[in-house]
Image (tube, rainbow, N blue to C red; front, side, top):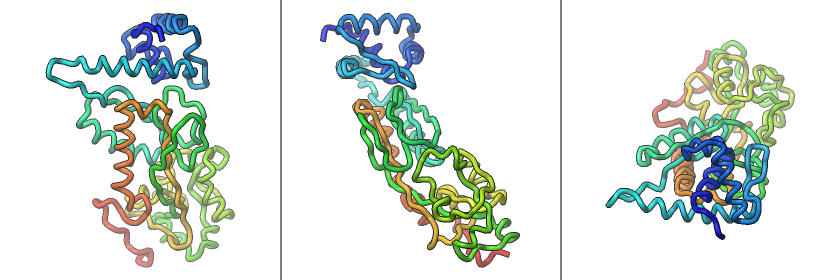
Length: 313
């Protein structure tokens, strides 16, 4: 491979962001220079290294081989730190997407703890609830609900979490406590907007209690929690979020609930980056530490247990 090392490093930056403009900012160049460097690299290699994709630029097969060489160049340059001081390999930008609840309760604390030891690390978290992408330009990590069906990617099971039916104390005092699953049909549901739900695994309440009518629906799980706390109806909520609030009571825990998996999807090249590998490990450790709360087997240590529904009045 007869290529200019500087051009290879430009390609590496583009591969990580999927955009010329973002790569240019990271490298201290302008968009035109990045475009010219990529063109020069393609001329020297005799083929295209990038192709247009929905989210930006995707590597071609030739581009993937070139990025392997670029990573070797980057690794060699990283050893040329100040005399006697080894550079921290866990640095740079890691980009990920995840659901709202996972981002707030798993990803954010995990990254905050990791950055205490690696201040050169920056993590961009975009929250969304969707299926795993088939093309993940510029994205290092995706966390999705349900087992992903993806190509040219690595899928890793992170763990499971439980959802259950919850209502606020004031709501139950006014409307009564459902004693059976059938009685849930008398209450409005607080959950995702059915027509906008992209993840089949999250259709549980419409499957388990199909006659429940929608009360408040939203694409954001934090809206579900707060609407349920405000008395908008019965919310189908992640236990690790709902159990943090003493004003919420879980209903019929032995009869209704859903256990769902969190999966992590990565590009094949992502784990070769020390920064990405460190974030992945931090997420796995956080999931393991809070397994009980995720499975609805107990509150966070700082939260007292909720009183029994029988004491409501």
